[in-house]
Image (cartoon, rainbow, N blue to C red):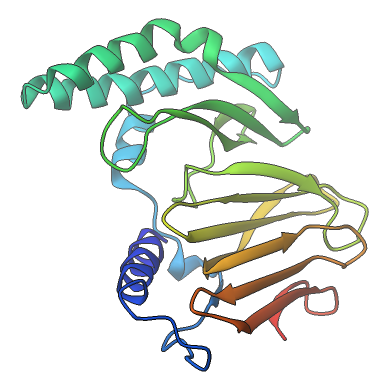
Length: 245
């Protein structure tokens, strides 16, 4: 989904150059919905390599979850530091050192089910380490080992837990963005406690996102240059996904 985020950023930059007109309409969709299938899943190679080189302890406790998370994120930030050392970027080296030093205290469990959890941790901005923020990641319990869920690529988002499809199970919505664009990642859970990445939604414009239970969730995006032009999507429980209105 990195290609989606890049495309959204390019489109919004182009749109900002146009002069506002009351009757103007966008030449792109304000809401883009991708239904996730196995062939669309692009695991980040860097994250996969870091995971391969991370020691993960077996067990399903919260303590082991935090230990595995510390091991994984330590390797992640060490790889960032190594890159900046190689390229002699001192201010980023200092930032990486500070993050690594405080990392154990900066990782926390936001939500914990039997088979998946949400962790809050430091997250890097687009390029540099000057805009570190705290964002949420999904972790899964697989073969009695807690590990990061790498099926999605948008790792700069905050989480919302909600029974969005009214089936009695807690689902996870991750959302975030920058530069007048936003992305929403939808994860639905089932009766077995498993979680599945089902949709990625890209928004360009002034977005109003209402996440509600009982199939009442709605997304409305208004075009920057014409407040009368809007696009709307809603969660359809029959199809179990967001659809354009």
